[in-house]
Image (tube, rainbow, N blue to C red):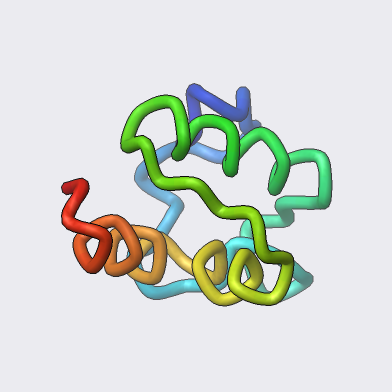
Length: 74
């Protein structure tokens, strides 16, 4: 994620259960969200088209992994 989004945050600073967005998170914004959705679709074939569902899925690394697993893509 850190390299795909070219983040200024080290990969080791991204926790599995911590929020990715907002002041409590690592500071991702809406552009990062779009890039993340594209990367997830590219690497895992998981399509995220519903905005509400996207917010749930993109909450944390754990929630992304869970969505990939539930879709049978991981």
